Image (tube, rainbow, N blue to C red; front, side, top):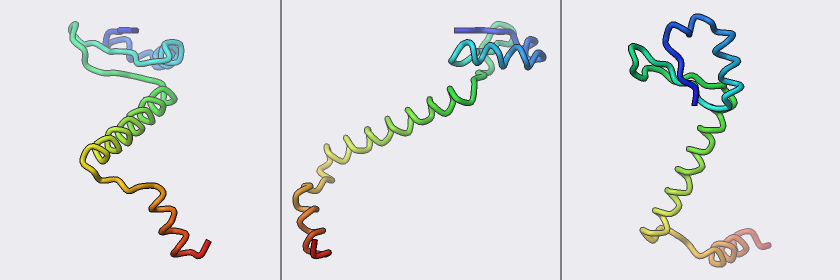
Length: 85
């Protein structure tokens, strides 16, 4: 985990290098307290994709728990009946 002071944000080339090298977030502090998080766009996109996938799994589990499911065989039979295949 990389932590840098706010004043170091002036050197954008170095910050970019650190984000790539860290392969994760770089934390920025001001007066000793966390203020910002800077990260490579690739890491950001991977993190967001994981969050979307986790949300979909949680929603699916909630549907299962609450009985909002349909038997797969019944769905396939209904599709066959409606399409003639």
